[in-house]
Image 1 (cartoon, one colour):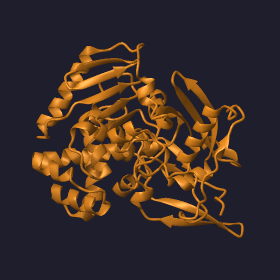
Image 2 (tube, rainbow, N blue to C red):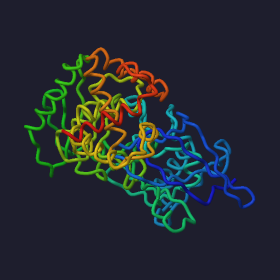
Image 3 (cartoon, helix red, strand yellow):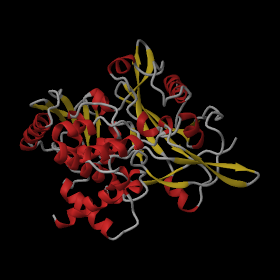
Image 4 (cartoon, rainbow, N blue to C red):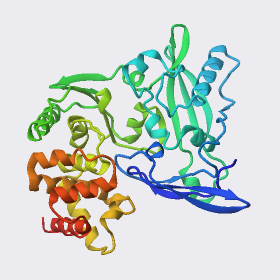
Length: 416
């Protein structure tokens, strides 16, 4: 079973439908797949276009991935050989799944449910399929203090033309440590940040590199913002969290075990269950991501999840009002785009259309029915049909009129 020789462009900004290319007798066929939570493409916080390479066989038939070891990796050394074997075994152990994986260190498994910080970003398809296409090559295993750093490139072969631009998938860098006299894998974050400065202001512990100049005013502002969100929307008292400050998405990626990554690239990620926030703007103030850590964690629709954070915290370094005006100006130039185009992520990623549309609906529902109505909106599950029905009910319109209503309400922001 071989992979198809063509690819299709996708926007990674939330769960979307995708297609699998099948090859039989030199003919390329498209097979449409309906939305399937198991194979959802994970959202990027600030969406970027990238290419998804898809499979030419059924998802259940992929072979175990083969791991290449670069000649630079000296496996004649016993420790290097053991660590190469450890990492190879992990890559062949369904690393996209969360379970008591024997190759990961016990301390992190006990502390974090989703213990491999790169998992959700790397495995945007099941690991067997992804690793068979983007074959792993161990580039280096180098000693750093008492630990060993493992760098691995995941790349495909035989790509031509523009398709080569989406290769490699990523380059990871994580660590091997000794635990009970055995080598185990460990996230890069605690190792890379062990000498970073730490300062607790209010309920937030800010963790930042030595070259960063700490801004106490923004730290105070961050706590006040979190307090206001909890108070204004009658949320439970928010729990403290750690905020790791980096200068950009690449530096943030290093804390997620990436030397380079494109799929899942982000400048902000809130790990709500772990009470960790990673920021890639070099600032103590990141209101959009704060909202994700303050709002009660439920399995809500992604349009509402990001819409609420955008309404209250802005998006892509712009306020909600600024983003809404940009979206309105683009819609005014396009009389064919519909609400369903936004919902299906077919249009407007460069204008943060999905996030901003969700924010517009959050504001509309709140203005119509206050906190009670907004909380009902925040409880909508990840089901597009229920989303359309619930929004229409909460606003008080026929669901068949939702598209024209959305356009009309969005265009109002041109006047602001």
